[in-house]
Image 1 (cartoon, rainbow, N blue to C red):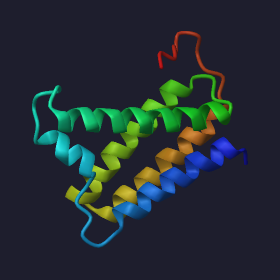
Image 2: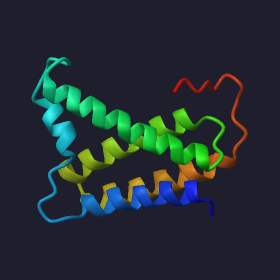
Image 3: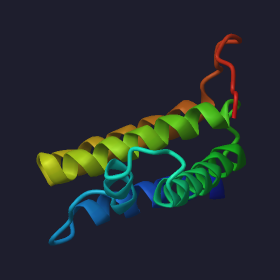
Image 4: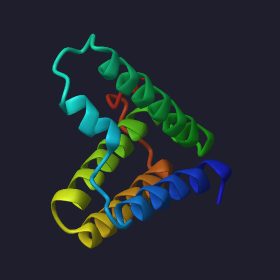
Length: 123
């Protein structure tokens, strides 16, 4: 397995493990952002900076793994992660962990799929 694929898998596993911790209450960044409506609020700017850093890290892993559209894959991963941490708090942690794992595995398998020309990577 390439280092990029291993990193994607490791980050997914890390998120899944976080969901299973005692007292887990979802993502602290998402929770904080939900309390501040104004996007220019310093809290929202910190959240946006963190999300940008996280997206770049994931995108870099998909790029290293050879994905032809690493920005698209990273957006899918981040959305999958956001949903998993929310579902892990609001619903069943076990179901969220399993769904996250299957989703990450699917994203890794998709690295080798020849993507459609109209599937534009814009970031």
